[in-house]
Length: 251
Ligand SMILES: [Zn+2]
Image (tube, rainbow, N blue to C red; front, side):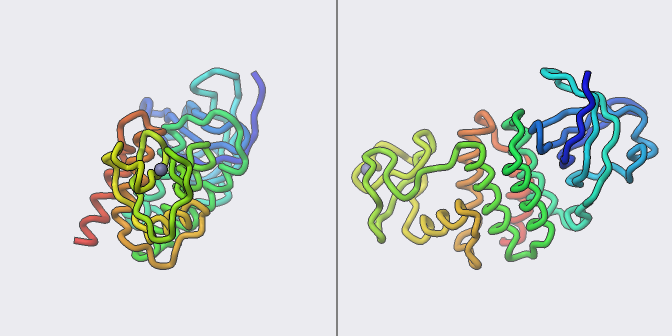
């Protein structure tokens, strides 16, 4: 067994017994890492502060390949992101980013994805009522791209023709992108007009538009895409929580 030390973000923790917790991290060097932490529930981290979800720092575990739970030694936090816990919608949005990576189960080190997750959590923590969904969706789509599932939206997934500026496409989840006007009879997916396509393009590039038109429709699209391609046919639980909170605000 080797000692592993890596930058990591705590994505989830749940009690295992009176004194133990199971922790799931997204790490820079090994993707998702699970760890069993004994004796941390009352005192918080052994030497660091309390173990707060979405905090970031240096994780130290006794590591063995192909083991679901590593032996936790220490997590020294450098950033705790307290603003996420202060607002239910921000917390739900952060949970969407975390759950995406946990459900995908990425077990390879991917420093770019790690950095992207950290930046996404920072943006969500700073977000206000108006910027929350654009910030979340920009990072959600770029994490999806980083996992290798980005949709094709500038040309038709069926015939390969580039979209006209004013053309209406239809999203085909199975094919992983938009179908053009002549090829859309084969799908029942949502219609995507020129503005929605342009805004989706900006989100995919990680540069959210200042004003996202129909944010709930964009949220639904991203959720359905993740359900189809990454989370095995069941929507992310945090996506449902976020959808309810946001729908209430917009109602
Ligand atoms: Zn076509």
